Length: 100
Image (tube, rainbow, N blue to C red):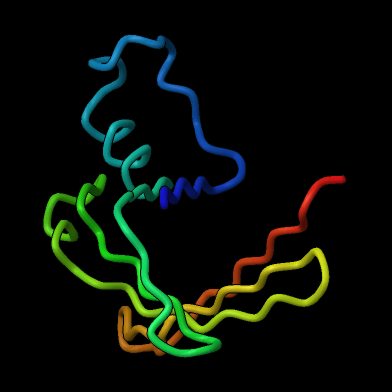
């Protein structure tokens, strides 16, 4: 399993060079992108666990990310567990539609 999530409207760093951009631009690029990969398991119907082996954020390697899922025809919906960030609780909902 591999996850790549990017915010809309990310600013260009002005070059494809991995060292491009100033510190602020590189920090913004990091904050507006998430990526991780590893194995997954389905411990029970409606639950998938992503076992993170590699991640953009180095502290996420080795963690398990539990998600609820629903498959409805050609649409797969994943919902993250609630996370508290900056004093508020939120969860994300991701939907994929199978291409014909």
